[in-house]
Length: 350
Image (tube, rainbow, N blue to C red; front, side, top):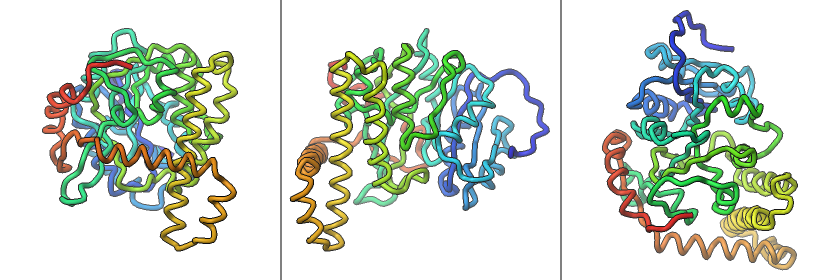
């Protein structure tokens, strides 16, 4: 069901901003305000409420009432992130599709910077800044670079290959995509997969899309809260394992041992994270007998967990935050990121 809208739709927008939203009433206004504050104003915003049980739909309708660029759709029941995004795709009217989750935010110049760099690319992605609340200053947030965490160091835009994407596990990036490419290849998210983002981008690259990766980031990814789409970390990481196993049978992987190895490593990494969280919960709950059984019966999972813990400790000891910010300082961040990001990247490429 869509929000009744008698406003006349005029010129075709250049970008359709797709915002799936499920139980994000406390975050959605920030997300939409960051979209509406873009320095490139030729866009539409399509919010799809996925059967939320909180005030998400009401928040979206209130913002739509004050800005004609916002359209609101509502699923009668919760159908999941993949199907929700596909519904938004079906009503988009623009040249480009851009993804914004309902609990995240953009820097004001994101669309302008990405479009100006696009050239003949069919997909453009930027770095993502992972946002966590400061442990010492509760009113401030620490930003960290996804590319750096995934050991990607860029000083200029570069073409992203399928192998690079899989090897560095870049499924978290939120690209802008030419809608004509999606239509030509009849591409949509697969709602049967437990984790859909990585597979969707994998398929785009497997089809030969020209994908440009930018060195700077303009997307703020909220990590302080459990995802409204998948709050169960066990389901998330087991879904990552299951989805990646499916990709091992993809035609693009056949005869490509490097790509198969990259996907195999992704499975090992996910097992390590899943094992770490399981082990941590057992310790907190003093389930020592189960810990003993785990050590005896699943030694390979323990090895993966040990590697994950080692890498996590290394990151904590060596990484530096990009900067800290208060939620009202998006424009300041935009300028600071441009100045800071170049200086913190090593002069090497993927």
